[in-house]
Amino acid sequence: MSWTEVADGVFARRYDELDLTTGLVLGQEQCLVIDTRGDVDQGAEFAAAVRELTELPWSVVYTHAHFDHAFGTTPFLPCDVWAHPGCLQALLKNGEADKQTWAAHYRKEGKPEIADAIERTGLMPPDRLVPDRAELDLGGRTVTLVHPGPAHTDHDLLVHVPDADVVFAGDVVEHGPHGFTAYSFGPDDELDAWAAAMDALLTLKPRVVVPGHGDPVDEAFVRTHRDGLLRLHELKTAKTPLEEALKNSPYPEDVTRAALGC
Image 1 (cartoon, rainbow, N blue to C red):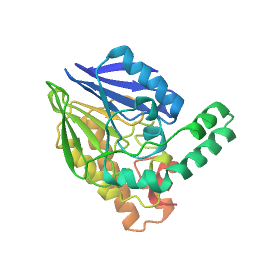
Image 2 (image 1 turned 60 degrees about the horizontal axis):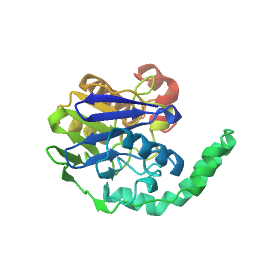
Image 3 (image 1 turned 90 degrees about the horizontal axis):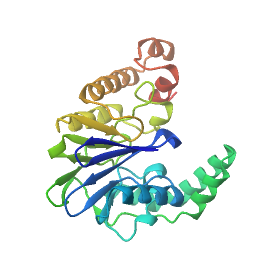
């Protein structure tokens, strides 16, 4: 667990658990917390870490609804919680089932303390919805929330700090050993749409891109993996035989299989 100041008053905080990366943007009057971790205890730790840096009143933004990004919010309340409308729908539809799934996962992994914390967690649906774009005035600094189109989910939000040339990308950008991991892809992912979302991110011309997992990256990293997604899309739409697809994919076998739905 550590803070990295990626620009003046703009911080990323990276965790060993799931290699998760959260964020914090300071204005003169308010601050914005980007994602809240995966359970009530993890959220409390993160809230305390934020308070080590600032006493400013905060708002929260969810980059998407997955548990590790959006389940740790109750220690931050009361506050505004920003997200895409699809994030609200996903939390209302799947949130309680996701709690059970992930609690069972951590018990199986021999981490009962995390399982217990997930079961004790109260979900906080967002109350400030951003279908396309919104600007938040933090006092002397404006942060823009942008829906780039479907990518890792159908409801991703980018958090753009224009004066610092920083974008918090959530899981639109991941920084695994090979850019993606086998867990990055769901069965309904549209790989070309995800690549288009990366193009939308690149139009913001960031100097630093903070992914949802891993270290901050740059535009070149995003371009490389946009091109990788387009290559996977070509292999998938051509119904390329698996053996040939594995030879022609820019990614390892497990990532390629997951992306192609094999």
